[in-house]
Length: 355
Image (cartoon, rainbow, N blue to C red; front, side, top):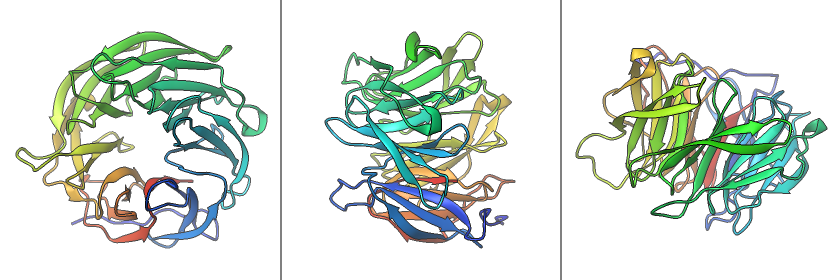
């Protein structure tokens, strides 16, 4: 039986939750919505923040006082900085061009000094300095990937747990790029390009909490590559490949997101097509993955993104095509997910982030 709790609350009005959606899609979303979660897992939409179109990914500043959002536009996108002086009322500070097409992911370097953004449309990664108060300065660098068989499509850029290395995952180049970031100049220097098998289409990676293993999620093939990570040398070594769907499962399937539990015992991945969330148990210090029974229904169509709430007792899924955020109970002891317990209508929803 699932051991179910409720999402934690902060403040009298409940925990603040940011919901991003595509405003340029046929079923137009709102961009950035502020929701609350209080007294249980259900989300309630409060209001839309104007001036944040195509909000497909969010990240907090190092002090969590500023929210950054992609604006996933073509042919040139942008990134927006918003003050969270009042978390329930984000206020736009400023906006900068992403210098590339369709910025799909961003993250804040642990130094707190730079915002890193991946432009999916043209396979570039851009660096913006974070100024006093959280505003974004003009970019300090732009690096471009090149695919040998397909056009490059940078899909994610993150810093490893040691804070020494920046990793960019490129779906079109079938590669993970490892960079050094010069904290004085804001320039990226390529350290290593790790090539995965042709057609793997890596989309996102997630690190095990021990900082020694990275799970690389393929989008073009429903699989996870378990890779050893050496933070001292910046060396990523691909290893075991684990399917995210059962053998013989109808396709096609295009995985969307991957995440680890805080204790490192479990890994989760979404499957767009089958419309499920797969759960895996880890072993051997994170180097082994074993899928836990049948995949759980996402409760909607095209689970682009999901996140564990702060209590890690609920998983919130952004079902893009059906325009619904659903919440699934999670048992922290077994790692198993239950059937969806509720949903919130958000057209073309892309992502959810808890404050």
